[in-house]
Amino acid sequence: MCKTVTPGASGNIKVLVTSDLGAQSFNVYLAQNASCSSLAYLTNFQNSGNSSVTINSSSFPPGWPTNEPSPPDGEGLPMAAGLPNADPAPGTPPRGDLANERHCVNPDTGNNVACPSAWTPGAVMVFIPGGGNNQTCLNLQGGGDVYLFSGYQLGRILLFEPGPEQPAPANTCLNNVAGHGITSLIGIFYVPAASVTIIGSSSFLATIAGGIICWTATVKGNGGVSISADPSLRTWPPAVRLIQ
Image 1 (cartoon, rainbow, N blue to C red):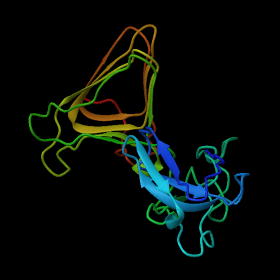
Image 2: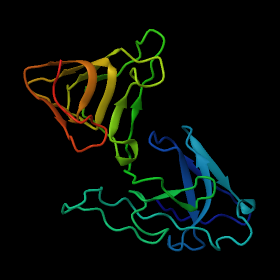
Image 3: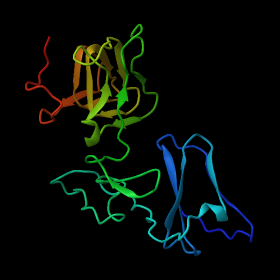
Image 4: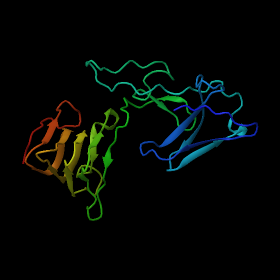
């Protein structure tokens, strides 16, 4: 967002963000006018709950705002090659679909840098290592709507628990996914040494769009349970099937 302020001759500007669970840090851009145009990068501060930064005359580097990047464009359409909502072409940095893919920002300088691969906004991977008594598992009891999705940069894996092919110890726990609301999980469950129990109901849907690789799977419920797999994804073994 952009705000206009008029500080006094010796005044400071304090930027305060109360909470944003999805952010690691925040960039601050300033303009030397009251129209929110010609914004230029000034500073960065970490997200730690009630996070803030105070800006005064000593905050501006020599020559500011020369060569400082402007804010990235707003989030565009998701990646979907060949579909009507196909991803728009990126522009020359700092323009283009920066909130979506292909361009990243160096948090130390605010400058644009190349991303290691295609990038999906907001994508997550839940990683639960093995060890101990293996009681640390995914236990999703959706009292409301739950939406989680993985992305290209994470190999489409949404839940990862190491198995015998990964560095020991393997995670052999029992994971639970209960669809008490609209539970939509887009990505692959890769838990080759662990178990998964998926519970639907007649009123609500537990959807896992991506597939499951696990040691054992239990599917319960009298209604909406949906599991789909895309064998074209590189994560899958050559044969994709329900086996025992």
